[in-house]
Amino acid sequence: MEKIFRVSNKLATSPAFYQSSLNLGSFKTSSLDTHFTHTVPALEALIATFTIGGYALQREYGLSDVGYFFPHLVPAAVGPLETENALVRPMLFWPITSEWGHPDLSHALMAVQRYARSERIAALFGGEKDLKNAVLQMDCYIDWNSWLMVESLRGAGEPAEYLRSQYPDILFEYRPNFMFEPLSGVMPLMEHLWTMAGSTSTNHLNGWVLDQNLAQRYVDMGPQKRKEFFARFALYVQKEQATIYSSWSRFPPRASWPAGLNELMKSIMLREQNH
Image: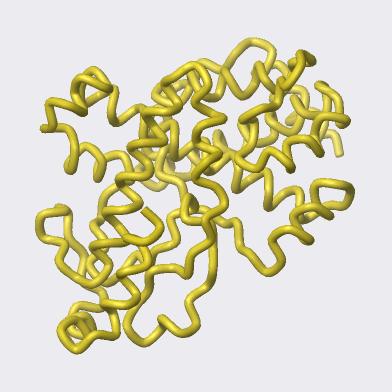
């Protein structure tokens, strides 16, 4: 997938694509079938990777399996005049420009457009809705990792030291899509991550984050601190979704958070209000 992804920036500067790409700079489409710029290889590699990751998340040890896709650092797929200065980011963090023909669709809907008609995919996932929810969960899992890494880098301690030494100058920002949908589609993943945060069993954080060496830095933190970390992520999700739905003049669908997580979220909000 990484090799396919890297083809896009090579195509961007080739004579066959260069001028046509410049003419299509801000062009957007609502269908993968009409996406025909140099970013096609990168986008198809990302859609396939997220579909595979979404399938892995439905399996018993799926979180650990998704970790095999990380870090795979790549220069972002960008426009023909930007390839020499493209920022390097993990491939899972969707490092592709939103222009140059990038479809105006969520990651999940792109996966549905590309694969929902496949009998093999239908057999693996069970149907279009299941495929969509699986990719939404993959989207949520990457956002959890992005949020945790960015928040860790803002602080001190072992997680921050590890990230700075292991990934100097690497950006972990990510733009998720799952918040545009009811959170019921990603709640199985959220419940699983919440349970893992509070577990004390052997290897209990295996898959909690993409980088297992980073996960080990959270082992000594203790379950209560990890649970608070995850509750803050859930609050961020809740706030971002409310902002999105407010822009549509709508209320977001009610989310059924696990009881313990919901109580901790309320406790954190009350604590912050009193300060």
